[in-house]
Length: 213
Image 1 (tube, rainbow, N blue to C red):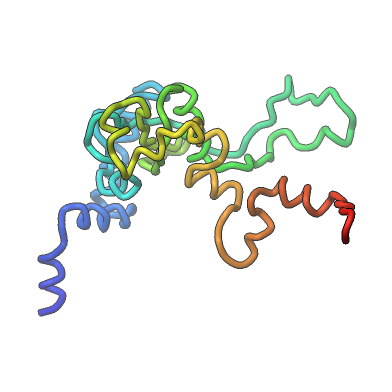
Image 2: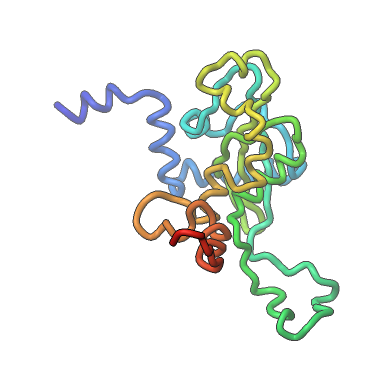
């Protein structure tokens, strides 16, 4: 009796959420294969008419209203090759280091947000989520907000992003993906990265000679 009642109470978004949790199912494998083929034909950064995953987008703050748009972006998978000419580092031997097996500090979702944020400089990056991937690319959808739009400025749940402090959040590691790359979180062991690694290093490596100590 109880499971049947709970299933009857599930809405459409809950069904979509459960479907996306089974990415190896026949349905999603087929959908992913078709979608990835379509996305490869499109530009690297393009605007979507609607989110591919409405349930996920809404959980991250998306609303189907004026002033909020979705952009889809593809990022090349794999580690970050060092950008030096012909693999030669013209410097001291200590700084030569690796060329190919060189992992990027930030995750690919953070890079995707950065590229969209640079393309749409007058919009603010709210959040992003994974959509699909193949052997070469990962595809993300980024939620962008227009801080100058009247609808956004009048929304008490969203107008915090209109503040000047929120300019290019994605470039300063303030989005969810950026904070994950910085290692910023609450709880035990994260005090080493709060408020940032550089600030903690500076505090531990500087001497403060106060007058009364």
